Image (cartoon, rainbow, N blue to C red):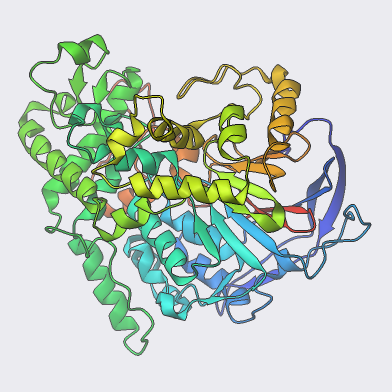
Length: 572
């Protein structure tokens, strides 16, 4: 399959050595000798695509994932041989292969509410030994594995060991929304930054920015970003902020099987902030939210419906904007009162978890909005860099980056953020909120986005590629110590490298929900496992809209940038 849309690239093939990974005492996966596509970029860049078929499949979620780490967890500093010991197929500009003493930056793109794939991709890098509790994973049944929270498969973070002193890891933001385990993703990435503060950087995404803004009481519930009926808070996410008795029972069962192990000590991610136990009415309301969502999508009423308990009484302003219904208006009448009460409770619990002064709220507020990896002369930002922002606010390289992050952190508190982002004056302090917002949402560095305005649409015309790249190169010439811009935010099936290697688009749709159902909310395998014995619809009542099955396998690509100029594209 041709995964690449890059143009004017020379191609050759190479063979990757077969690698065997022992899964358990009776099962192993043997990769065949693999053909992979090699693409040479013009800017001193080697790109290697490593295609490892069937190494990490997730039909039983983390049981195989944990087992696949067996080959890497106990053998630092060579934690992942298929990455570290690649066959040299092209020299760099000095006529050499990637130097052994090169430093490296691994980069993981937008995860969008998929905690299983978050752990899968970190495990795939081989950067952390003792990440997963293999004994717990292998001793649990497939049913246990499907229902026990992801964090029960992680070893206590005090046991994690960084395996490569010359490597760092960058996350590109957008940890939340579109998938049902956003909270678990945030908690996992937070644990990584807490455990390895000098090695792991997690920048802010526009979805985290919108979450922080939604906390302000001046924003009516119907006007919150999280109220959209698509692309924001997945309905399944809300149950993470309450205590699930079914999961707790599975945890007790799993712990009893591993009574002699002292490693499996992490708490259920919901337990720390739970205000009550979930009950059968919560299951009912979640089912109805999914069903109502499918009715919205089949009617193409995405903009007309908001995921709020009810609309305000005076809705003329909202009706002029096309907002006609609350999601509960679509529910059967006998369930509307219950649904309104529960949905209001869910939204409050969700926002309260990220308030200023809370553990997760403080962590999100302190994320950098931009990161410069000096070894690879690359600036990482979630959305992009416009010429105006690049030349005016990034001309001093590292100094400019530190200044922007300082300004952001000084204004990220919920008491300041709304006014900061809505500055109306022309003084520097009034425009910096707009600069921050643009860095997290700008798409103008991508060919085909020439008509981009804030949340504008893609004009699907890549004929402006030469012009876009010319503007990019000119901007980079005015940015000290920066040769390349790497972004997330704009998804595709794979990463894209453009403008002679000076621009990297790293959002390769890593989350299974956005890959499977796009921006629409559909139930996944965990929900169907939880609702065994209940007829959970997959289609709208008219049969015209169907929720595609969410795959059990993580897809997409991540990258490793080396200080000698090589770029390694890594797949599962």
